[in-house]
Length: 286
Image 1 (cartoon, rainbow, N blue to C red):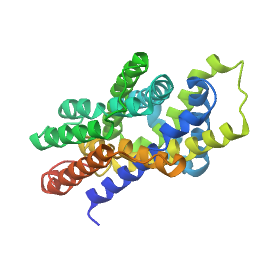
Image 2: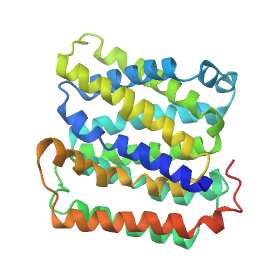
Image 3: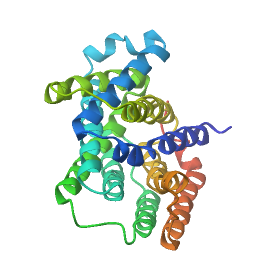
């Protein structure tokens, strides 16, 4: 298989796992910070257990400024997204977070020396337009604080993509230490109430192990084979997959607008992936 198609498939698998976050976070009882703490705690434990020890016990993390930046961006991205999902609708949070694709496209030439192309801008514009169709009738003005938090999350998400792209050889360590930092940072705010109901424990365990640890492992692996812009565009599968879980578990059927939006986003991703392989051959991806 072509290496870059392999990378796209890894990022797509990560997006599919990420897409379970909206319904999972909404289903959990407790504050946003409690959700953040347990989700990252379970993710850190799972990563330490299943990743090779040398992959995350690396000396590079103590001296590399970009790597430290990736850990901080990771922790901030996870925390702000959970808060946004609790404070506003899941649709708002996901849609606004993926505005980060614009930041990735604009900053890639400066941060990772990947040129910005007209086809990148076109694909992102078309994909965002498709996402807008997907959320017709659901994108609400309420929860403006949550909307602002989602936009902030988009900045941290873009910073994470770019830093992982530069330091993808240490990406597994980023996942582990990023989750450790996240759980430690929010622990003082929820230390007086760490109780969980059995259903919430089960949901948070799933979110930590699969929706965070495994998803970010796949995403980081995929970034070794694709550009930052391609990764952010492929990641837009997350918001179109999210309602699929709502349909499967809650029986809520997607609207005709949602179906049309999904077709538009998938078309944009496929077009950008298949037509850009010749151009990517000149880029230093490994």
